[in-house]
Image (cartoon, rainbow over all chains, first blue to last red; front, side):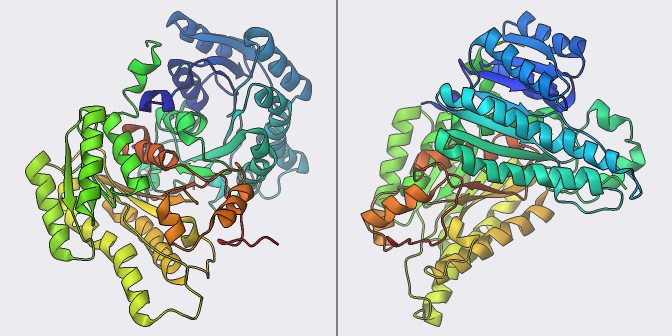
Length: 255
Length: 269
């Protein structure tokens, strides 16, 4: 195996949830460049299709699928669509997720919602994909969590604890799926310059975030996509159960 | 956006134009790392206590990859020899883009059977040498794009390992040091560590006190049901040194088959 094969996904099929924008889009496009056929899933059909069409126009293979990852039937439909289009699944990237600061007095529904979106969805999708990945001869599951899973702050009870749960789910599922030849890892990104962050990012907030960031800049989607490609490729064949922090060395908190 | 993976991947994981020092590169992990990094485009300085081993690796890498290599005999516990390594690198390649503090050694010792002298020697070889070599390289690293220091940590340095008390303590200190270096070396220089699980590095493992039956039990205990190969570690170094990891510093990347075992020298029961 040469180095470029080691970091490639030639002939593989990857599902990327939340692949219509930001980090997920970066992952979908890089995986396609690395040789994978990509199932781009997004809440909005046209957003998923837009990314898939861009990949196809550039000579890659991709389809767009609308999927609300909090809906069990939609999760099953996503897996079915992947099999229908490409006949197998080698890699699942659970990137869809979200939330943010909520007051301590939030309704219980709001708290549960964070877990529906950031924890239950990735567990169930992993359950649904695991038999297919095993059948394809093994592969990788990658969960995109957040530095929030380690940080502590007020108003972060729902989001941060759900991301911490995602991290620990990763470490534990690795034991369940290791014997089936499926590696399970996570990336905990720091603050990434995406449209989602732009809504709250003022120059002052950015300056505060960078004060404790050794590498002196916020992240780009490609920083996460590159780490994702490493973790899902043969180069990381002996890596499982890991939460890889990609944060410029820092902790960028939204205060 | 083209879709030739070879063409595209030459970019984020490429080490074209890098000059990399690898200590302990005459051994299995260091040697495999030299091969992989050179394949990714780097020129490599193969440093080892045993010059013959260093020269063998350097020649093989150069032959296989066409990249420039330099073999240097270095006792990393000697400040003078460390300086000579840095000087030889600068003379040959004119720069240092990355330093891999890979050299290390530890063997089984009963918990209360370690002399102060032995303990100090373990720290000197496994920890202090990496500190000092990093210090000597730092001014040169700061002049390069995407420069980095990467440390070969060990699983014994991140979990209680009384079977290897001198080695595990020294490795734990080394891992802690990598985070401290990261905090004040950015944005110019990144510093990370790979926490390495049980790798099949041939005779070295047997010399450390393992026997074949023990190694079989160890492999079975890993999540991924095998011990690592030197190349499993080499690719992780490739990632951490490359532009793909340009926003990664201060991390401990565990490359350990998912880990899992408790005793480092598990018995049959």
